[in-house]
Length: 312
Image (tube, rainbow, N blue to C red; front, side, top):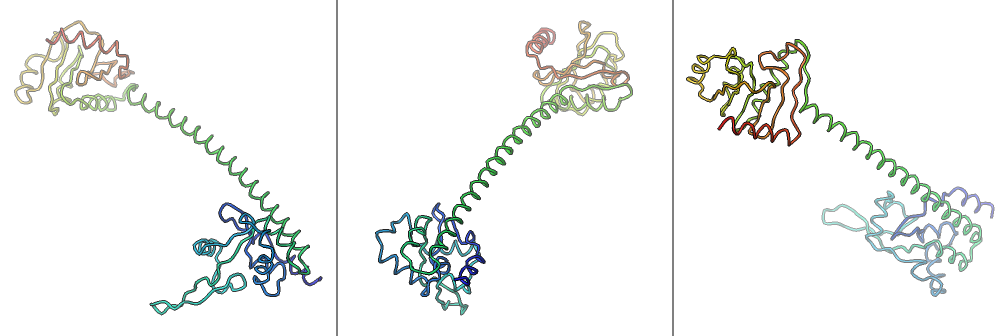
């Protein structure tokens, strides 16, 4: 009896509990080993047959071949593990030896194991039954605790994902503002020049430049644009009629309208996007100024309506 007790204590029963069809079960071969059945699973099968009415499907069921194979792969069971399964050797066409399941095993749920203990007559039946019940309880606690941890982890992941999304949205909004609103400080001459040129190149059909102090710098920036350019500037500035005439003889894409009604500078892209510029193009970067993409539709429409009468 003491020898049997030592054997049982050396076995971790929790490792013999599997989840199949959504239920925690034990294999008949493992139970035969634990209950010290002299004839192995035959003893269990005989006991079940004698009391078949005590073992409904919710207490025990036979595994399918597919369920067995899945069980083998998940738990690393091999053909050599003959103490737990009965296998037969197959001769395959490629002359390699494989294996197949000779007898599909039965599995017992917790209720089935408890019932089995009442119909088996072995020396260790009562002691083993208690140990097995304890193992089932331990497994339920283990699974329950891990499900709780998983729920907490999933909750924290969702919470962190929400925070990350908010941060991403904030960064996205910041990037959008950065794209439409830029400030340049004294002596950032090239950066300012490059930004204005990039804005001009956004135009696909037409670019309208409103700059009362425009000079030949504007001509240098638009000469490679394959679109119509309208420049609205005051009558007495550094850009004279001869400059415009010579420019159009080569590039022929510029219309100049002399008008003194504008104080601010604007760049209008395809009569859709309007940038407000705090300095004339030729002075960009000499002092602190900003370039802003106008977002207020009322302001944009007001400027466009005014230009319709001016350009027509």
